[in-house]
Length: 161
Image (cartoon, rainbow, N blue to C red; front, top):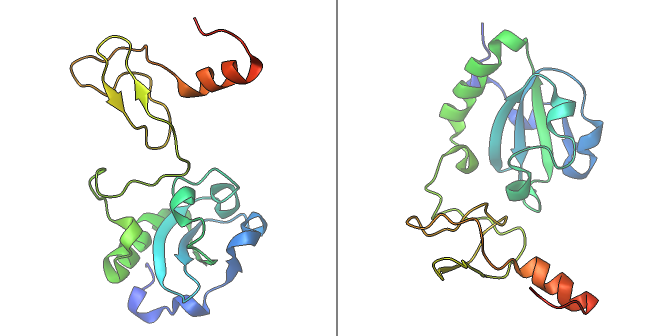
């Protein structure tokens, strides 16, 4: 039997500050990312809470950094994780659990310089990482000016090829 989201007070669950997430217990759980005003930002499930939240590993860490102040969890048996997580998501409907079109929610973790394709001349602004091919859907070349390589060469005083 899975827990009823209406009967569980998330604020009363065990929790830990965001900065101390490396001290989470190693247990299967449904977890809740909360803001400083205890607004529910994200709900997830994991077999190992400690492993899931180790630094740099969680897929939503970039979005939650700076917004999440506390992680709370409900320890459960592994076989009931999925149903319980879905029940909480349906009940609370946190913003970050909804899939949005990629052109609406773009998270810039760093400002990257624009790149130009050598083959077609298409210019584009990478959002998070430099892609493996041209952003022009008709080109798909794997050669473009890599601003990081150019900048490093200039810093060392090396000529560009």
